[in-house]
Image: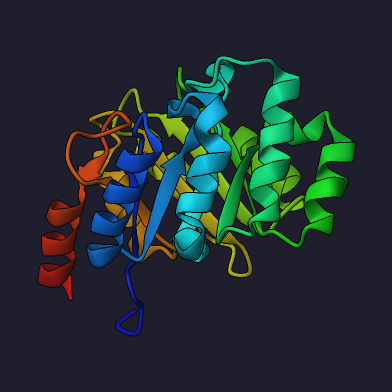
Length: 225
């Protein structure tokens, strides 16, 4: 589709508010969006960081991943939930919330909906890529919560890539679906051509396995356009 604008989202995982602010302004000069991984911060400094970057939050996906989901947040779950509520009050472009978190916490879901913040419901499988029928079921469950869905699995073989990309036949959902790992790299790019609203990239060292660099993606997209 020649009318498609392919967008990128730079993942930012810095350990201090100042560094986040600096990386963010660098990222937004070249990228449409940035993902702020708040779980890399000391949680006491999250409120300060939110204040520092609030004018850019309308371009940011905010994420506070617990260690059980491959993240770095080490506080209690109660503590994490209260920070998620705080982030929601800043109305970022998207608030990334794990399907496993929201599925067992109806009060949290009600609260987040009341702030009118758009939710990106995410689900990660760090071990493998399940078969298509499991992926489709997972997708339908997530769709009940939000139209913004992120499904990320781990590619063990090349055949895992078409499995994850088969989720892209639905038009009214903003779906981000790809495989992690080196074998999955190609899926991060192909997802854009299939309708993903953006692909996650890094400014420098990749934050996730198989993540492409912003400049690499930009030059590939220029050639394809």
